[in-house]
Length: 195
Image (cartoon, rainbow, N blue to C red; front, side):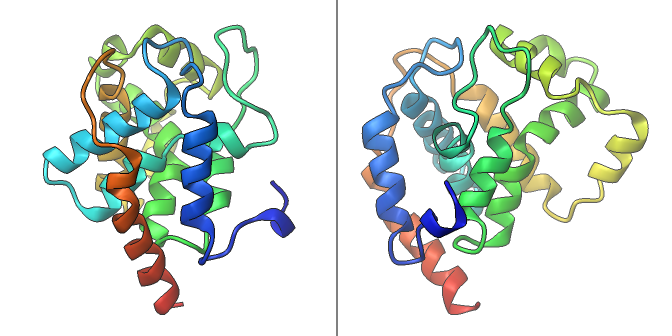
């Protein structure tokens, strides 16, 4: 998606709805759920856990870059990273609050950070997440982890990462995407009224 094709504040929520409707049934990266099921599980869990609006919306949108990036969706046969986190953040940047965009932008880095700082985290990852980790740079170095720990949105970013990991259960019941539309519209309005 080029900057000229990027939706504005008045059309981004409709664009996201269309993406979920048209592409949500696609397989999710070698997991037992579809793309939509994965993101809806993450957001539903966030809501049930009483997370903030930012974390709920970021959990819902964290993988939208798989649909809008120039490199397409991840495959278990990939040998290079497709940078879906950057594509998703680019789509949302300037339209949603910066903390939400930060969660999307850094949810891959959060996996690398947790693998470097939590000895048991790697073992809990799915095989697809382990494969993508190897393409995304592996665990952070000590210096990278120290730098990442200084992110002012670290807590929210890590929560989105944990929700990402949890949202992979076949057959789990979730809210529909339409349930989250008022939240997305509220956050877009909030961001653009303060711009």
